[in-house]
Image (cartoon, rainbow, N blue to C red; front, side, top):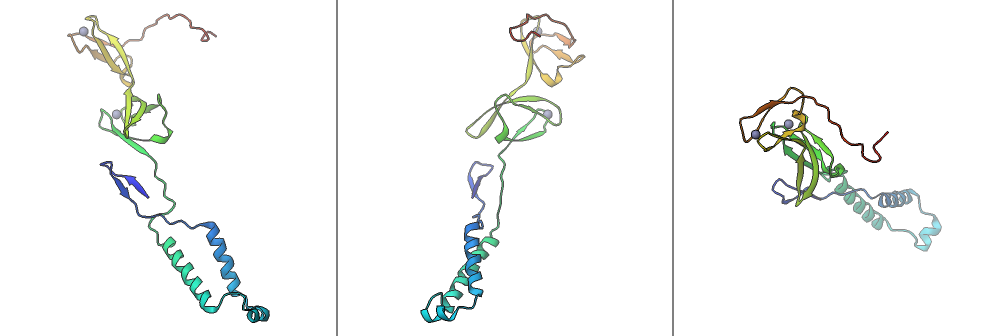
Length: 180
Ligand SMILES: [Zn+2]
Ligand SMILES: [Zn+2]
């Protein structure tokens, strides 16, 4: 069994040896048989295993069991995780297998939000969730959604303008299917 190390190289976790239930059942039956005293007829007809053969089987089973029980790993589950560092410095860790494009990932520390996009060459791509606002000078500025709250001060990246987020009403046409 292998996994990927930090540098992307495959790292061996040694061999996983599982107890095969069908093998265990077979061994159980065989060993159970050994406990029965052979009938006179069996011995006369030379049926069944000799003591030497039985001893050999037992050694074989014991060796295999020892290998299974001595296996350093068993029933191992490795979730596929990705980590990203948020602007606030917090390490966000999520399981990749349950993520779909567009799923929202929120930083547990500062609340910043990102959309899960895709995984390309083992690297997770995220899109920050932002709102755009256009300054009077024509510059498009961005504001992370988690900061877009009433009263928050914003500055234009191009001019001296600074403003404050306020709540406002806007009328939009009712699109089809949305009316109630
Ligand atoms: Zn954060
Ligand atoms: Zn401006």
